[in-house]
Image 1 (cartoon, rainbow, N blue to C red):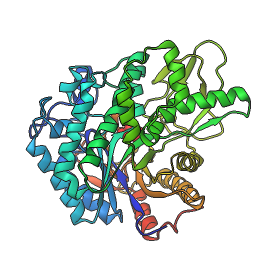
Image 2: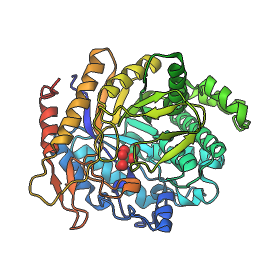
Image 3: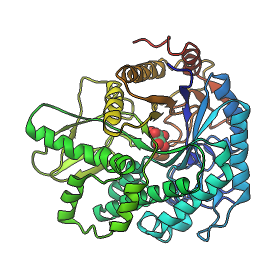
Length: 460
Ligand code: GCO
């Protein structure tokens, strides 16, 4: 491992900050949706808004040299007229200064799903104007924080927030509509190119990328039918984001297929030219599991998503594309996610071959129900999960991939979207009931030692 390799953890503003209406922060679409549905929410979450200093200090004491976090658009921009909230600017300036104080390299996401509600009210990602608004918000961030940040990303996991929000309907805004899904997907990818344009035109220092929930696609056999299913699955799961962000083109066969049934006239030639021109410098891959497929047989296929959804809850019906299956011989998490470290190696190799860009593993971790009241939390399962996935990264590096960092999800326990706080990913336990007390788990000390020994601790 070279000495510049980044080792750290990743969070998202909504999942850790809390302080949802503090210091003139505007409401986000998640605040609004969870309040309205009366579901467990992130109003307080890990109270990182008030405890960031302790959290960042613990990262540094845990040997980590980087922190991936997101900026909250509604904390920074008060309204659709673009008024800047200086208190929001002040908060992130303090976070960045604290990172500096503890020698932690910030890796910053502009959008991790918390769209301002004032935009959602006028159509959100279905309203084309939001693309320009996103680029303007990005410019505010580049201007205020540009000298403190050298690794930026535009969007976190477009696939998840678009597919869950517009097709499955279990995330806000809760649509189940393919035409809307396509429109939102297009607007997000166009907004990505506009933000990159602002970054390039402004000559800000550093690099800008995108973060994708990468799931390499495997087939159940070598048949031609399975290969066709794999191609559909790969387009659907990966390529519409990464080909577009990195190569500047939506996958041509996907567009051809969709245009048979849907009106895609919203894809304007001049905008497609912009998408072609403004592509990313690097790719962040979030890896939780792979996708195993077979060809579609008959009837309606149920494609089951196993990330960020409880067992059997998040499903989408896709006709004639592919069928997702499970390999029963592999272990799964309590949330039914197949544990498959080899997929991370395959994904890195595949992405590097296809895009030839530097890669970061921007999220990887295991969500578990844990008793954090005990004195010492022995999360051996997390240690073994991390060991095997870091080993997969080492294998990919040995095979020639340019991988530059690893971010565990998450450095401390967070609120997990629709799963609330019972799904814990952290290296540090947060007592959500009693005073938000932080307590390192065994995995925290293991990670520290692993970093200090530069990976020598990894069982290969
Ligand atoms: C969870 C997840 C995370 C988040 C993350 C995705 O918290 O439940 O599994 O991976 O969803 O926000 O980027």
